[in-house]
Length: 637
Image (tube, one colour):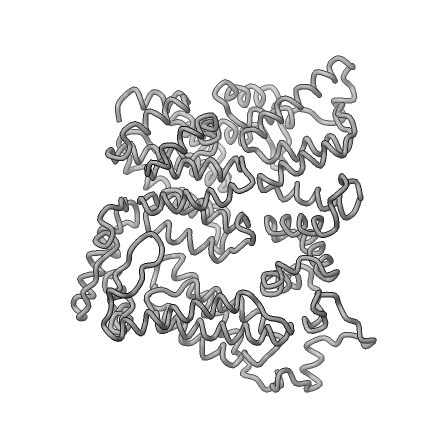
C-alpha cells in the first residue's frame, strides 16, 4: 500500500482514506482488502454519511464494494423507513460481485428482526455461508462469539486470542486493527488487563479509533462500570472527539450523576443540561442507540434540568427503536400500555407490537416475553402467530417455568377460552392415561424427542465447527425416523416444527434427503393447522418449495441438467442434483477434509478445498465444477 493511504488510515482521516481506497479498487486486490477492513468499523461507516449519495451513484454503476458500503450505511444509520430493504438489495448485489462481507449485513438483519421476524437459524446459515466465502467480517464475529460463549459456542477467550494472533502473523504491511481489538476483549475476559490495554493501544495505532473507548473503560472503570479515575477517563475519551469518535459524545453520561447535578449552581446545571442535549444529539446522528434512550429518559422524568415532556420522550424512544434499541421499544410499550402517556393515535395494537420488537432484540428478558404473551392472549400479534407458537411460547415456558395452557384452548383470535375446569398438567394427563391424537404418550417411543434433539444439535455443531460435516446426512436419517413417531403427539407438534426447521437449515448436497425432510415439515404444519383450525401461509410457501424441489430432481434423473434453474446470485453445478452426486458426496468431502487437515482455514482455503473435493468426486465418477469455475467473474478471496 502506498504511504499516502497508510498515513490517512493511521491518522483517522476517515473520508480521505475511504476515497483513496475506493479509487481503482475494482482492479487492485490490496485496496480491496483494506477497504473491506475499513468498512468493518462502525465508526468509519457513520462518518461517511455525507458521502452517501456519491457512494450510491457508484454502487448503481455496478461497483460491488460501493454496494457493500451503501448497504453498511443503511444497516448502521437506518436513514429511511425502507432501509432494511435497501440494505438487503445492495448486500445481495455486493455478494453477487464477490464481496462476502456483505452477507453479514443480511445475517445480522435476520438476527435483529430487520426483515419482520427474528430468525436465528437464518442468521447462523448466512454466517456460515459468509465464512465459507472467506468473509473477514464473519470471522471477526466468530471470534467474538468464542470470547463471550454466544451462539451455542463454549466460551474460550484464550483460543480466540490465539486464533486472532495467528491471523495477525500473516499481515506484512498494515496489521488488522480489528484483530488487535478482539485480542483486547479476549484478554479482558481472561483478566489480563495489562495485555488488554496493550492490544487496545495497538488497535488505535493501526486505525481503530473506537478502541480509545475500550481502553478507557478497561483502564478506568471497575467491574460494575463505575469510573475509578474521572480525570483520566475524561481525558482519554475526549481525545477521540476531534476524529469523530461516537463514544466521545457519550462522555457526559459517564461523568454526571444525579447527586452531583443537584449540588451544582444554576449556571453550571444549565451548562450540563445543554451539553447533554448537544452531545447526545450528535451521538444519535452517528447511529448510537444509547443516546436517544437517555434523551427520552431525561424528558420523561425531567432529569438533569430537562423539562418534563412526554411527547419529546416518545419521539426520542422512537428514534432509538429505529436503531434497534430493545430498551427504547420497551419504553414505547410501557408508555402506551402501562402509563397511557403516549401521544394520541398509538393504540394497544402498536403497544404490543413494540413489546414484540423489544422481545425479539432481547429474547432472554423475562419481562419482555411476559408482556408479549399477555398481548397474544388478548388477541394481538396474530400476524406473528406462526413464530410465536413455534418459538416464543416454548421459550416462555423455559424462561418463566410456567406451563402454558394447551394451544387448542384459544379461539381463532387467540383469546383464551375458559371452560370452567382447571387445566390439568401434561404430566398428570400422561399418568392418567389420557390420549392425544390417538396416541397415549406413556406408550410412545420414550427417547424419540431426545433422539431428535441430539441429532439437531449434533448436525449444527458439525456445520458450525466445519468438522465431520459428512456425518450430517446420517444424522438426518436418524432424525427422520424419530420425528415420524412424534407427528401424532399433539403437545410436541410446535417443538417438532422448530426442530425440523433447524435441521433443514443445516442439510446441504442431499436434495432427495432434503425432500423427505421438507415433507416431514409439511406434515407437521398440517397438524398445526388442524390444531389451530386455520390455514397458515407458510404451509403454502413450503408446498411451492417442495414442488420446485421435486421438479429439479426429476430433471436431474432425466439427465436434463441444463434445464435446472439456478437459484441465488452464485451459480452451482447442476450435477449436485443428481442421485450419484448425492450418493458419494459425503465420502468425497471426508476424503478432501482428511487431505487438508493440516491446512489453516483462513483466507484462500477455498482454493485448496475445492480442487481436493473435485478430485475426490472424480474418483467416484462425478465431474463437478466448483463455484470458481461456475462463476469466473466473481472474486472469492
